[in-house]
Length: 573
Image: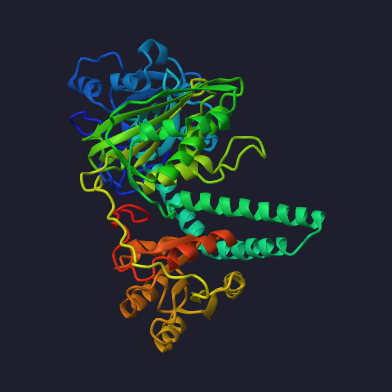
């Protein structure tokens, strides 16, 4: 044993060896400190358990701290005493506990290394504090903070082992949730950081493949080019899904009747999920409007419905429900502010998910499907969209009893219900023939591609690779000689796209400005023009660029704000 058994004083009180500030390795101290006075081993003068009429037995039976004694002199060191709190913790009856070794609390996910440490401690007559995954009588797991120490008589003979328990499941789950959130945030930051450069590369690949397709007449070569374009477009879609997970997608939130929105694309959902499952809609009418981007909402619901279909290989029913929820005291626990929310639930009768899969279900690229059956981005994208919309995605699932995916969106305020301000039109639309466009792009390959597309259509083009060069070029140009600023958003140096747009707007308030980006983080910046600028996402097609340029040129001379500023989008609380 560690140390010398404590001595009994003249009054016959029990003694022991104090901890003396030593930390119990393997578990968090229940008192929050190392402790100096509690015993690591005890010495008693009355070893029997028959006399239970004294105040100490009464206290042990009344305490909420589960406690047991085991007898190392009997075969397999069985439990010989368990207080009522231990029975409440484990859900066993006393008759089911006495005479059994504590290993009956262990289960499939119990760490065998922890079990070996407990066994070694008992064999060495030592003390230990450890946290181990145990199981109740009904099979539910719980994290158990266990302290075990020896009890001796006055001659130094070992009589019992004492063990106290503490259910620390809630604290462990909170820690794990925090770690998962940190991991997801790190993945999101990495994803968003790579998106800008990756989308620039895809822009060059897509754009040049599209231009090459217009100059080739051989059918076989055209098929090669089309296959390459399809692969590049899938890469662009994948990047978009990752940005949705990272909550960096540029949303266009507005008050939406979610029941009407689901009804409007129910036919698309039915055709997408196929005939092996039935789609049932249970949609409440006259619900308050939710603030969200309807396009992204439809994609999220569709992705969740496709997952539900895959969870029912033998067929079944997918039910989509809408309703209203009011969060008060439980709002903070769900990471939301108190108030009214619109609930959208997608329920299936599928195979369900065990708890460890539920924990990772919204991680990007995590999937339990066979190779080639899914990317693992559907739920990740939906979760990112809901969080970016200031809502919450919740998962309830049980193996063989189906899954419920619930999305909560904030109800639109009275201010959000106001219609957007009308666009003020110029007296005469500017002629696009021969219009002069200033392109600002730090990627030389993307710059060359955009210049070639626009010049081939008849536009005059000037170029700059930094905001500083573009501003100087604009200041030196004759007033009114430049008809459109087409600028990248993220650029090196002290002047990014937003700041460049602001400075040029001070010189020529009526100049139309079209921005492009593969990464929307900079749109969070509060600038006077940030909410009113048009943004073309990368990678864009040739037709997309030409259409947006024509639309922007038609706004020449418009000085009014084109849309009401929104409090929603990439900005987060």
